[in-house]
Image 1 (cartoon, one colour):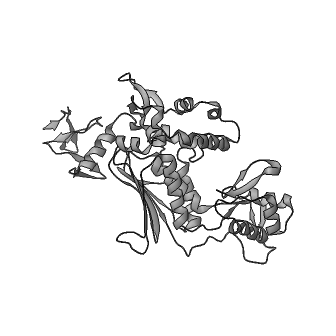
Image 2 (tube, helix red, strand yellow):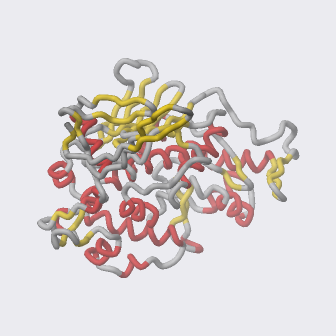
Image 3 (tube, helix red, strand yellow):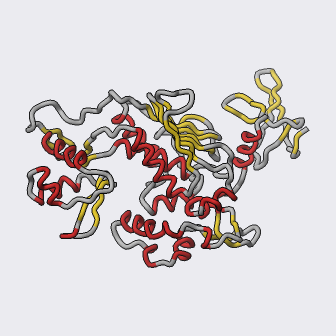
Length: 396
């Protein structure tokens, strides 16, 4: 009746004058069928599995290995977007604010150092792995290996039956991240928020964590289409998932479980992800400032993150009063005038244009020393180019 065969040992228990037959079903490393039917346990119910995609996800869940480590021995350096590596080296160096080991490595050495070249201990095969393909592979290579791979970015605010805007992304994870972040910047408002003495870009913090999560932790061998959807009252991501359970995840019950540790490590090296589990905590922390509500994290064969949206909501981090009124954060004080200057700087700057310190001094009518202090607090929005007298500033 069971395929493959399961061996069970019923136990007879006497309890309060009654006979109970106790049968323990151990966790199995395989998917078993009963009379040629497969069932999945969902909460307290046994649900018959009929969809091919659902059955495939059960097999993926049972695998005792990370699919990102799948070796492809016939892939060579020519199959990768090596033109991305100079930027990656620079990002890794900027992330640690020092000298990163990748700077002095050749392209091949960098890929090996990042864990993108390995050996299958079961077969003895060596080569570049699936993580390398997804992070840096050329588009045709990615489509050859994962033909169903794509991320569908949608806006549904007016035309809820179809979409107001759409971008289907089928490229490496580095450029996918860029394009999804730009999609979020295009369609989501950037609400002004100060934490301590530093300006925090709530939109970018939240979308960064959502997008990084859906790119890093998805199951790439699944045919399920990953999504980034923006609606009137919420935005959400969905992706195929090698589930370790089912249900709602909160900061209290969260058990960090790396789905693709090689890809996650690569993202951490370039500053697009922090330590495991920090994304959940960041989204919970900043969503209440952005929309006034807590997010939802739903674990299952499809992993979902849902963040509420409310254009009318504003977390007022500044007390009412004249320009001398200040707010306190620990021992820090921020005047209303300072916040006005932050806003002036950001409204003044244009995408892709570079500015000198004198440009901002003229704008604000302030000395260079004070202007530099203001720019330093806007590091989430503005990046520095060059050093000392040749230093310039531009929007990230």
